Image (cartoon, rainbow, N blue to C red; front, side, top):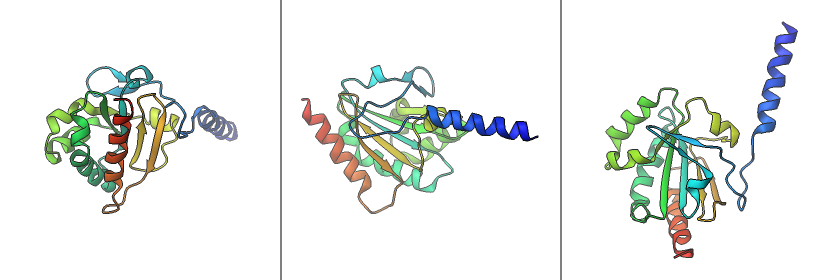
Length: 173
């Protein structure tokens, strides 16, 4: 029994040592975030685009409020081909997130192209996602421009994300 406990702790420590902290100004350390249907969000797919990555789950009430606000606030940026949005569902059953999207978003069908999954928390653990929701803004250079942990309705957090995204889009135009 003691050996199993030691092996478990050793495994957890190894996993923690493989995690990479997210630091503003550094490249996003992502191997790949899997899309719901096909493909992945990779460092190569980030180049030349402003990318907003939002880690969320249907069991997180604040996450759902934030996504609804993000849909409205980022509408202008979504029209720009140099912008991409990635909603990364952490639900063990991705169909729950899909159902929630379809029931609660005005333009759910269009936003499904932005639906990514991480049911085993592989990417979330690697990036040390430590709060829900957690949003990362990546500039066109592939570097982290902003990390937002948590969400509080009425504090202008999604407005700030929209403004920052707009500013990053203008920088390289």
